[in-house]
Structures are given as structure tokens and as C-alpha cells.
Length: 153
Ligand SMILES: Cc1cc2nc3c(=O)[nH]c(=O)nc-3n(C[C@H](O)[C@H](O)[C@H](O)COP(=O)(O)O)c2cc1C
Image (cartoon, rainbow, N blue to C red; front, side):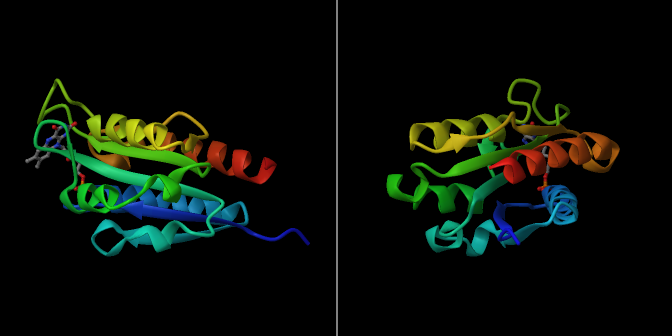
């Protein structure tokens, strides 16, 4: 039997929305025989992403286009060798009622970070504008597409 693919999901969440999204994604990947490990940004470091087939970075946007605080600290400590050559997928949350100019900007920040450090983003980022449970279908479809990509490798 093929060895299970392992996905590490590093996420930051202040109000719980991003947590909801990564739980849904994790459930969907699990249904597709993919093992997931969820790590909160507050306690994440480079060792968490070692040995993963793919890493998901998930952060909400706060304060006019910034990452969640602990996520910003986490990525500031990562080095090129932690990212380079590794497969990634990105989840960014936001809400246009807080800022119409920087909607889900966290996804853009994380995409730029991964690209600048030689990582490989395997598909379009999941951007959630507004309350995530109103976007369940979008989340499920995105996770199913990601599962397909991972299992094709
Ligand atoms: C103080 C504050 C600032 C925010 N700034 C932005 C922003 O600049 N851009 C955006 O798209 N969403 C912004 N948001 C919306 C959050 O990103 C959104 O509510 C998200 O779902 C929160 O995720 P969490 O519950 O996982 O923390 C802001 C929310 C708050 C409370």
C-alpha cells in the first residue's frame, strides 16, 4: 500500500474563523486518505514543516492588510532552506467590511513570502471574504481539488 501523504496546516486565528476553515479542510483531506497535522501559529516553528509532503499556511487579515500577529512572527523566523523546494497551499481570510482596499490581503502576503523563498504553490489560494460557514461549498471544493493534486504526486 502507498504511504499516506502528510499535510501540515499552520494557522493563526483570533476570532475562530480561520480555525473553522482549517478544520473543514483537514476533514476533507482526511476523507481522501491524507494525514493532516494542525499547528497554531503561536507555537509553530520550522521543525513543524519538516517531513511534510505539503504545507498549508492559513491566516486572517488584520489592521489594514497585515497577517495575524503570531503568524507574522512565525514566518519572520523561517529561512530560505525551510521553504525552498517545498509544496504549499495558501488560505487567506478577510472581510471587506473592515477594509475594502486590503480584502483577504493575508493570502497575497503569504503567496509573496512563499514565492520569494523558493516554495512551490500548487494551486490558487483559498480566499474567504466574510463569515466562512456561508462559504462551505467553496471550502469543500477547494479542499477536494487540493486532495486530488496531492494524491496525484
Ligand atoms: C480589527 C480588525 C481588522 C481587520 N482588518 C482586515 C483587513 O485589513 N482586511 C480584511 O480583508 N479583513 C480584515 N478584518 C477581517 C478579518 O480578517 C476576518 O473577520 C477574519 O474572518 C477573522 O479571522 P479569525 O476569526 O480567524 O481571526 C479585520 C478584522 C478586525 C476585527
